[in-house]
Length: 344
Image (cartoon, rainbow, N blue to C red; front, side, top):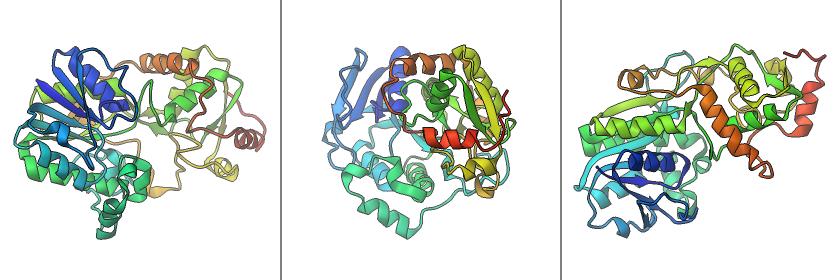
C-alpha cells in the first residue's frame, strides 16, 4: 500500500509510520516540520505542510491508506479530505474513548451513546489560532465531543472506507504525556511510594506499538467502522507490582484512600496519573471500556513487562527531563505523612 500518516512525527503517528514501513508499504508522513524529522527511518518520505493552512504538499498525490492521528475538530477532517479525495482508498481516523457520553457503567462498547459538540464548542474550535489547533489540551471539555464530530465527517464522506479507532490510554517510550512514565520513574527511584485508592481498582492501557499494528493490519484487511482500541482492564496494584519487578526496585507502596489523596491537594489524572476518585461517578469506569470487537478482529497485546522494560530503559536515559505528570515532591510528602505507613 501507499500510506500517508498525518502527524507522522508524533507518538502514535511515528509508531504507525514505522509499522507500515516494516510491513513493506510505501510510507509518507505529513508534518508541520516543527519537531524535526532527521531521525525518520530511511524510506519514509517527509511532506511538510499544515493541515490548517497549507495542504499544497498533498496536491496530486494518491494514497491507498491515510492514517490521521491528529484531528481535533471536524473542520480539520473536512479540509484534509477536500485535499485528498477522490484519491484515497481507506481513511483510518484515530479519535478517543473520550467521545462517550459517560462512564457510569463498565464495559462500554462502540454502540454506547457519544457526546455531540455544541454550537459554542464548534465555534470555539474554529476561533482557535492555527498554532493552537494541534494541541489536545487547548480544547478543554470539548475534546471528546469534537472528536465525535470528526468521526461523523469521516463516516459521512467515506462510508465503508472509514476506519475509526477510539483510542484508550496509549503508552510506551516517547509518550509525551508522561502518565505511565511518571509511575515507572517514581517506582524505579524506590523507597516509600504513595499509591492512590484501592489497589484492586482497574486500569486499562495499550502499548502504542500494538495500537499501530492493529491500525495497519486492520487497513490491510479492509476493516471499517468504529473500534475501541485499548487493552484489557487489570488491577492498578498489579501494574505497580509489575513496575517494581521490572525495575528491580526496593519501592514500598503506601496505599492511601481517595479522601487522603484529595486532602493532600493532589490533582486527579495529572498529578496522580491513571487515577480518578471513585466519587466521580461520571468517570468511574473510564478505564474499563470494552475492546472485545478489536480483539475479535485481530488485536494482539505484547506482555506488560515488555512495555514497561522499554519505558524504563528510555526514561533512565532522560532523568534530567522534568516530567509533565506525577506527584510534586511536597504533595507526595504530605500524603505519606497523612497516616502511619501501611506499606506493601
